[in-house]
Length: 334
Image 1 (cartoon, rainbow, N blue to C red):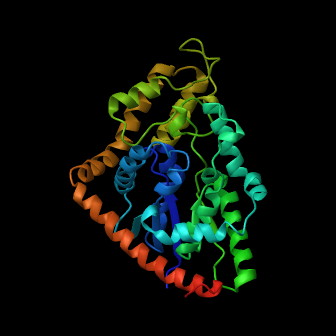
Image 2: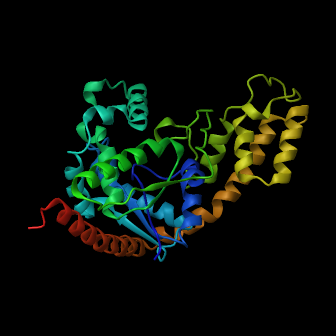
Image 3: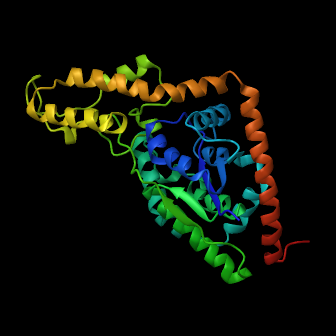
């Protein structure tokens, strides 16, 4: 039998290059060899978008079309909507007894996201909701509801997987050997930097190139990308290693051209404007087939609806079977 993979994305906006290189390309490599469940995590999206339900609802379809556009095959990947699997919410309640608030507050991923929200929105600790603090518990429920064995993640998500493993061990120590401890599968690509040089490309940071961006938008964003601040004149030599334009050339340009860009940049024979224009051309060429596939799904919304419906149905069957086993172990199988 194939091992089960569980992963998910929050429908809070369209996918960008960070998602593509940091996650989706890994999914494409895995979809052939595993029983693959991909969760559209609308409940988790509501932890910090509870007052914007329309935004989350719209983005369920948007993110699904993005995922299909990058090449994920609905015959190999079960796309499902988190809120439609009631067992996840039920298991979240059960697990809430197995983890302390202090442990959640120590989770490095949670701490980093809280700090980011404070920086962006000026929130203090009192504005952090129970749902947001407890989303690692919900994520543990996501994984174990489907008996997830392998979880594709970036390094920044490893603390969440470890928290899930702790919950599984605690559950098994009380109720018997029932749940599997998930193992992370790290992406070969680290997180993608933003156009502004930030270590993370983010939807809310204003530094992302989205997969749906049209050619004019791509041009505008790349023309504003950060370059070597010490290069004042066109023929000044520069350091490509601190230039975001060169960074993105390495993502979408050929090896031969990348070497040429690097050499000319260091020698001062390449100007920043010309370099950006070349990147704009290469970026639009790279994104063109993704946008073409997405256009098909935009024109066939019923097909997207059926993909979500069928994937959610299969996910429900798996969740029902798993919950019967869990409730029996907990002696609440009345």
